[in-house]
Each structure stands twice: as C-alpha cells, then as structure tokens.
Length: 306
Ligand code: CP
Picture 1: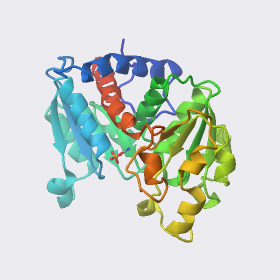
Picture 2: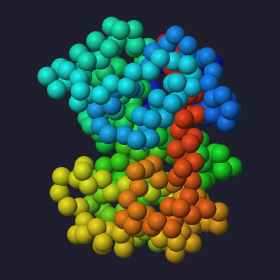
Picture 3: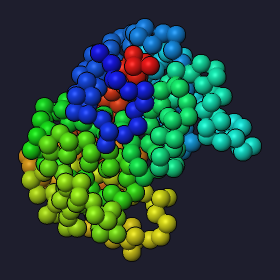
Picture 4: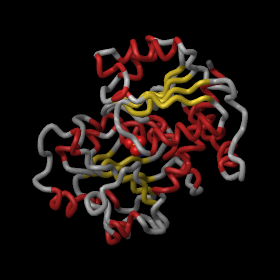
C-alpha cells in the first residue's frame, strides 16, 4: 500500500482513506520504536533531506530519527550556514539538493505556501513540516494517532482547541482533520486570535474558556505565538493566562478521562499551568513519542509512492 501522491502538503487535501492508511502504517512502526534495535531496512538507499528555515525541536529531530530508523541517509540542511545567506532562493537551494539525488525533502518555512511552491518545482517528494500560519500536517496526524491510541473514536468526539488559533498552523491542520473524521471541534480564545469566518469550517467558537471546555474529551492547547503577532492582541500575558490558561480547576470542567494535548513548545504558566502539563491527563510527551512512529509511516508511504 502507498499514498498515491508525490507530496504531503496539507490535511485539507488528504482523504479519509489516506488518513486511515497513515495511522495504520504508524502502528507497525510504533512496534519498531519499542524494540531494543529500533531499525528496519525499509528506506535503505534512499536520501531524506531536512530543510528547516525555522527553528524546531520536535519535528526536525523526529523526522531525523524516523528516517534513520528506516535506514535512510539523512542530511540536516542548515540555512544559516548555507548559500541561502548569499541570496540563493528556496527553489534553487532545493534543486541543488535534488541534483544530489534527494528522494524526500522535509520543509519547514515561515511562508504559507512554501511547501506547495517547492513541490511544484522539484521531482523529489516534499513533506510540509510547517509553513507559516498555513498547515502542519504531520503534527495533526500524530495528534490523531495519540487520540486514537487512548482508545477514543473520532465520530462525535468533543475537542476544544484553545488559544491563538489565528496564528496556528497546528490548529488549522487539526480542524481539517478532526471535522473530516466527524469530531465536534470547538475553538476557544479571544476574538482577536480567531480567524475571521472560521465557523465556515464547521467549528463552534467560544470566547469564554469555561463554557468551551464544558464536557470535552480532548483539550488541545496552543502556544501563544508572540513572534507571529504583529501587534499586541491581548493587554498583558498575565491577563491572557487568567482568561485562557489551562489550570487544574479548568480541566475538571471537561469530561472525566479527558486528555490534555499541546504540540509544544509549551509556555509554562502562560497557556498551561505546570502542574497540568505534568499531570496524568497530559499526553504531551506521548505526542512527541508518537511523532517518530507517525513520521516513519509517512516517510515509508512517501518512498513507496515516489
Ligand atoms: N510541534 C512542533 O512543531 O514543535 P517544533 O517547532 O519544536 O518542531
């Protein structure tokens, strides 16, 4: 089985069958990540290039680990020590990397649409590892995998996505994925951080966090993305934390057994209280662990498609 597409760019364009195939493929690689020798030869002879124009801890590391566990050759390209600083464009950089027989390029970029532009310009497969405010498809897939791993079905699942939705590519990918799968998605946050007309995507919007969390099965917190906000969208961080920070008291408003998610990096004491981040209901580190298996599945399926 393979994905019948050259690139993985968004959840908006991924079908339910493709989502199911990725999650099922991740299951077999999850077993590999639990072995003493965490390596299989599935991508032997293939080359994966991590092309990250923005900082990353989780995504870059887990793509590297995933590719290495599949026995691929991995190049971590660092724009700051490359000819990008001499003015080389993204497309020229990628075409030069491609000329060295790269099979898969994993791209993170600050511009929405960068991955799609690159995919049109190169023959290698392109995986979007986050493009501006647009999408972060592999994050949403590992989020789905983590929810499913907790024994939760998606149809009718109540999910609150809380915080700076407007600047969040993670929120956008999860909205596309979860609504497609039949979940009830609530967006919770200040009106200044809510995209205009977002209800058209089939979600409910709440500015009152306590109401938005009432009875949900999943609380997905978002980082306050101060670096993406051109102007102050909230009076003070303290005020934001008071109105939209996830505390242990607020978790009690959710359904019994609700899980707390966060794509990371977390701002402790801002969008999430430290005791909640470290609580038994938190699956934040499970998300990170699952990221390796899900990305192994994606790399495998992309290499089969190519
Ligand atoms: N979740 C996520 O994308 O984290 P990084 O920015 O560390 O990759």
